[in-house]
Image 1 (cartoon, rainbow, N blue to C red):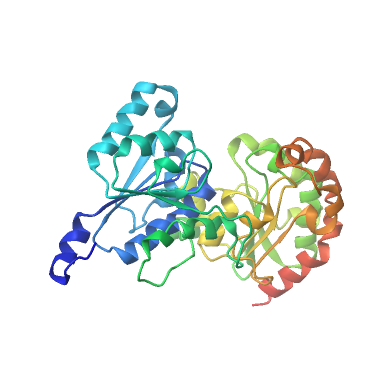
Image 2: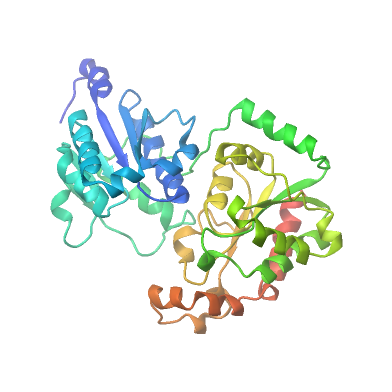
Length: 369
């Protein structure tokens, strides 16, 4: 539809857009690039983002999102509450809906939304829900990784006349930075050292590198570098965190500030922003660090596809390792379901010695700057 120049500003002001990504922190953060680029293209549009309530801290301060619509637990457990949410969304009368989630929960919302234009991935049996169905690519074309490339593909039907920014971003306030600096001072970190954040534990056991192996990784970091070391873990994971700490060499323990934690997710983001790099299990912490521009070294679980989440991999600032890089015969011709069932056994084959030199090379490059 052609919009005369004199009418465009009014049109864009009235344009209402909803982006849906009901998943975990990493997914929500990566999918926020859709909102960021829509803002570039439609500066006066209303851009709303539907996400799980638990993930909203990573969106705070993002100027490209007008309203964060929280998908709460009650919307999962109560059909009435779910319907109420869907009807509120319909009442907003969105012009454009982009569904980056594309699962049952979002299909029902899309079906009831009455949005004029609806974009999602092309998947069998659900194309009728959308006006535009985008191919769900299986292989990355760049070092951005599939997680980013797939999100950006959802913008292609719009033919945006702006330069696309593919990088997820976190927005940290001066107050949050100052709070983190005060924590560093309180715990007496040595300020002329670089600080390494360890993504110590995954969100579940099947995404958590064996504790004795991550201990070896931390010792390697401490043996070869004069650094401060912080652990990222949830309060419920403290026993595993203590196991790792006590298993480290005494010389390593002296470099670990075990109790330096953010009190909540926003506080953690502030702390992470004061670190120089992150190493460890793939997960939300890694994605947040990348969104803050921090170098990363990721250890992937054997059942996670590296091609999806090895985002921004350049062999310098961002590196990752996967069992498939070293022992592909153990994973070949196995389904994701089978790999997940055998993840703990496969993890045992993923010894730190396999990639020790790669880790040391990464550290030398990042810490020498």
